[in-house]
Image (cartoon, rainbow, N blue to C red; front, side, top):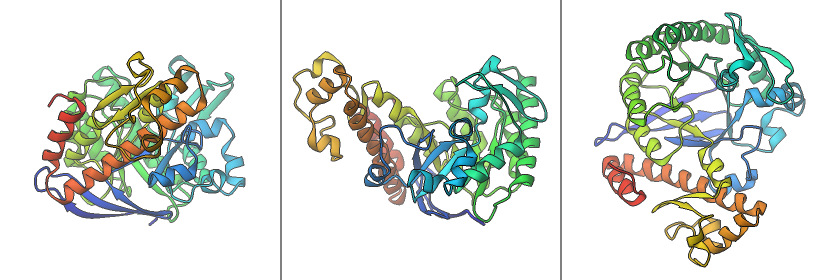
Length: 372
């Protein structure tokens, strides 16, 4: 099989997991945060910079790459790894979330989803088979089954029908997967905010025996406390010896809380998006660098960080770049934010190894300004 998961340890204090995820392009230490490279690039970062900050795996998006430049072109280039000059692991999202986010621009049937491109309005159709065909062509290490992501809030019957269609689509994805020896296909658990439906979906999807499983349909507008509660009753129904992936989550508090609830993998556009809007994650909380208070602040962005940005540039300079609309502003703050989250995951792994993750959480939350 393309994907093997090795569970190394459980934290005695929290139950969190430490593991190794073996892929065709390297072994990943888990829990792990995956920077998002939606269009075959992590915005503002080069592959070399991603390696400098020790990104082990990145995520790209099937929907966007299908529309532009097209999966056929990427396959012709030798796959995503060759196309974007990245020799470490890659995961591709199936595009389900993006398609279902189109609202009135899409129509769902049992066969798949007909939708109009957000780029030019052209009509397209993606079925489970087509999604897997695209992902096979893109060539990442891990591919995701095509699922239906129910909106929040949504009525019980809608969510039940949605998750049952997701199960049927997952079977079709597995049957049409052409490269199981090169790519691991993960199933996605849905069920909205309903406990019985989450458990039903977890049972149906795990019965299909994928090499890994994702929890989808969270971080879509529900309160964080609700997301944590759903994880608490969903992860016990997921295989103990396979990786668990929480999709679309990347704030520091959610990463820590997710790990405590048994999650091994995370991704999110948050650190890169807020960087472009002038906000940094630091060891003492968020710093909105565009604010006037940093006009003549010549301290580093984060006094406790040794990333390239913090070693070389002041808050005053970063504020100047942002106000002057210089591209370097986005690059330097993005570099810092991704470095910060990857270092956070290293600290989390160390805390699991030393059976002190709950103590780590308490200290981190106090420093960052979160309420316990």
